[in-house]
Image 1 (cartoon, rainbow, N blue to C red):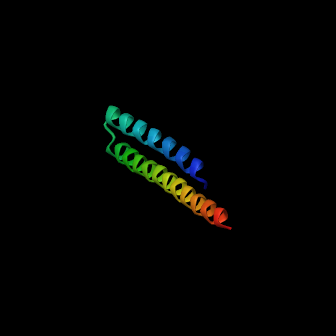
Image 2 (image 1 turned 45 degrees about the vertical axis):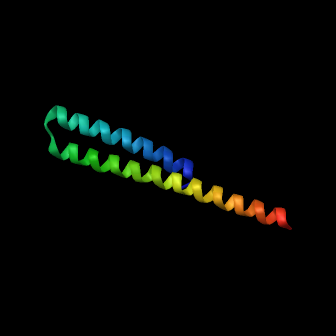
Length: 71
């Protein structure tokens, strides 16, 4: 996945995870609360992966620009 797709999936997983936790709390389901927490953590990781991909891409582009400038 690209960085934008990772970020979008991360936001979706965070939202779904938070919703599951809320519903789990409302109905007294520890299983649903645990699933929600895990999904929220997964979303955080996906967003972090997207941010890392963006940072790497920017760094590579900067180096490529410097190399091309020196040619």
